[in-house]
Image (cartoon, rainbow over all chains, first blue to last red; front, side, top):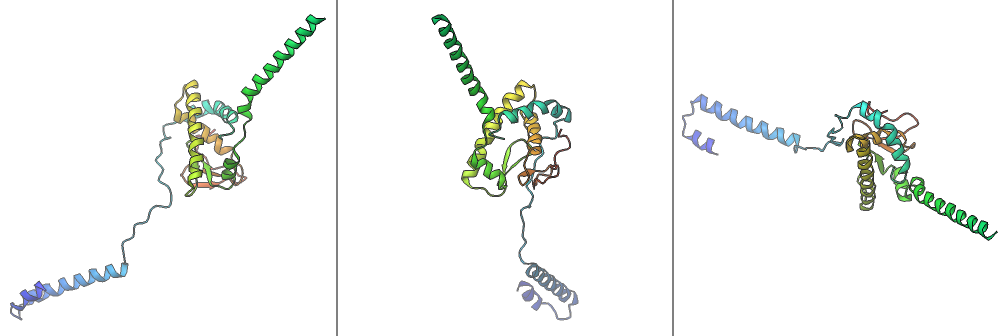
Length: 81
Length: 133
C-alpha cells in the first residue's frame, strides 16, 4: 500500500521506480508461495536416543581386570541381573 | 552313655546351626528374578544397557519405571561396594558388568548396542562394545 501510494506521485515514465515495485512485489509473492507450498516448518525429534558417551575413558585393560569379579557379582546377585 | 548322647546332641545342634547359617548366606545367591522382572525382560519391555544398568524400552508404565529404578538402585549399591574392593571406579565396574549382562541375555531379550539403539538378542553374539571381554 505504501509503495502504491508513493508511486502514484511519481511520473509514469520513471522506469526504475516501476522496476523496483515490480521486483519487490514479485519477491514477496515468491516468498509467500514458497511458504504456502512448503507448509509449516516441521522440526522432528530424532528417532535415536541421544547418547552422551561417558564410558569413553574406560580402558580395555581395566575391563579385563574386572571381568571375573563382575561375573561373580552377577551370579551372586542373580535376582537383580 | 548320657555324656555321649549329650555330645551327639550338641554336635547335631551345631551342624544344624551351621546349615542354617550357610543357608542364610547362600540364599541371596540362589535368589531368582522377581516374576514381574522376568516377564518384563522376556517381553522386551526392559533391556540391558551398555552402562551396566537396566533400561526401559519404549514408554513404560509407572509400575515398570518403579521396578527398574529399584533394580538399578540395588545394582548401583552392589557396583559401588565391589568397585571399591577392586580399586576401580563405579563406572568402570558397572560398564564391565554391563558387557557381561549383555552377553548373558537370552534370545528375544533386549540389549543396548554401542550406538545406543535397542537390539533384540538372537542366537548370534550380541553387538557389544569392542572393549568388552
